[in-house]
Each structure stands twice: as C-alpha cells, then as structure tokens.
Image 1 (cartoon, rainbow, N blue to C red):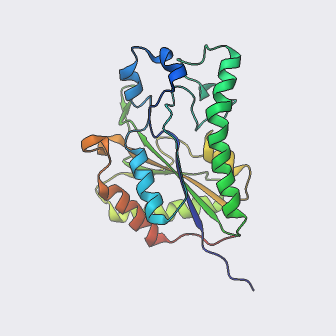
Image 2 (image 1 turned 30 degrees about the vertical axis):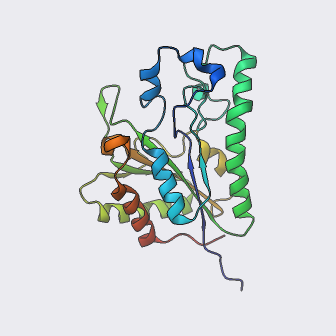
Image 3 (image 1 turned 60 degrees about the vertical axis):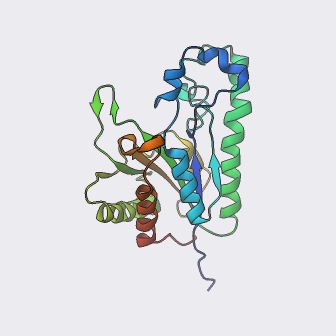
Length: 240
C-alpha cells in the first residue's frame, strides 16, 4: 500500500493592500480615508500571510490591490465584486478590471492548488484576512476565527481541532468558527472547493480581529506564532 503523502500548504491574502493603479486614481480622488479604512483593505493581513507562508515553506499569493476597485475574494458574478466606486463604470471598463486583475489572481491560485493536488497531496489553503471590530455599530465578539464549509467533513474536522488547539493556547481570546462570516459564503475558497474533492482540498479562511493590531497596524508576532504552534499541535491531514 502506498503511504499517504503529507499535506501541502498554500497561503493567500486577497486584501493585502489599498493600491490603486494610475488609470483608476481619479475614481478615488478625495477618498484617501476610505481607502485606508477596513473598506479598502485588511490591515495586518499581509505581514501575517508572509509570516505563515515563510514558516510553512508554502507558496504565497499576495494581492495589494484595493478591494474597492475589484474584490478578488468575490466571484465575478457577485454584485459585491465591485464597490460603489466602480459599480457605475461602463460595462467594458468593469470587464477590463476583471480581466486585468480578478481573473489572473484567482487563476494563479487555482493553478498552484492544481499543481500541489497533482502531487497526490491534500492541499490546505490558508486564506488570511482581518476584520473590523465594530460593523454598523455592532461589536464583533470573535478575536481569531477559522472559516470553513461545515458540509465538507475534512474541513470541519480539521478546523474543529485547530480551533480547540488555538483556544488552549489563547484562553484569554475568543476563538470562533465561522464567525463573523460563514465559511461557505461566496469567496475564493468556496470557488476552489467546486474544483476539488473534499479530501483533496481544504479551504480555510483565517480571520483576525483588527483590535489586536499593534504599532504600524501590524499584528503582534504572538498571533502568527500561536497560529503555527496550534497548527503543529493538530498536525496536517494526509493526502487523499
């Protein structure tokens, strides 16, 4: 019997910056505060993604384009793929945005998943995000959360074990699953799940509350260390 190969990790960050290409800067004239807010990007996500990828020896896909131009974590047909700043653009310009930025990023991630899965290894995709502590006047209780599709048993089992390990290492933090968003909602991991069987691809969104941000709007090193240590506690799933 052929031994099952260890899982391969992949790290991505869809909202790692608030960059606006020169051709679209006129759309954001006077909107610097909006771009710098949680609406424009996920502060702290990019350094955390780099840290996790480096420690795991994993491929990293990092986007620095502002989500207000086109949201790489939404499907092309999702009305929220464009913000109020781009939704009213003529259709050819919106399609050009998808062609230039949205499609290449998602296909690049998909190609990496396919390559790793082709090696007979389960692919554990960690999509790194941060979220605002208060939305529409309502505080959000989670500090660190894992999002996954509960209908996919390997994801559910893996994330339940990882969340338990996180909670043991961070008893002072609120560790949650599928909060403040549902892991099965439209997103990059949901799109990739449709291409791969349950045991071959595990898509996990890591969500960290921006209230934990420190100086320079970076997450303190203990967040990354704790995620990695708790991940080691659990161990990665074997290939299908």
